[in-house]
Image 1 (spheres, rainbow, N blue to C red):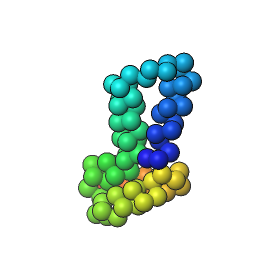
Image 2 (cartoon, rainbow, N blue to C red):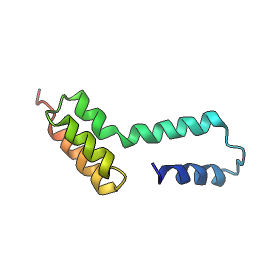
Image 3 (cartoon, helix red, strand yellow):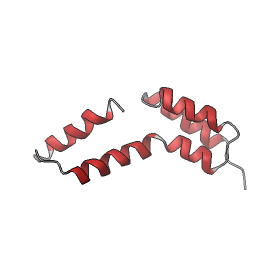
Image 4 (tube, rainbow, N blue to C red):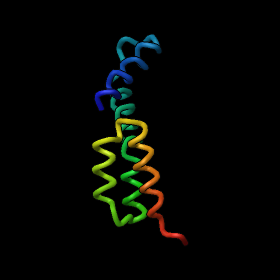
Length: 82
C-alpha cells in the first residue's frame, strides 16, 4: 500500500486537480485495494484448498509484481474443472 498512495496523488496532480475530492480519492483507493487482492478473492471464489497460504503470499509479496502474479496463478490453478 505504500506504493499505491503516492501513485494516487500523482494521478491527481497530473489531472491538474489540486483539490482531489475525498470521494474520488476513496474510490480510487478502494479500486487499488480490490485489484491488489484479486488472487485472494479468486482463491475464495474457487474454494482453493490453500486459501490461507495464498492470502499470506498476497499480503507479504503482493506489492511486488512477481509475488502478485505468482499468487494469481496459484489461485487460478485451484479452479475446479467443470
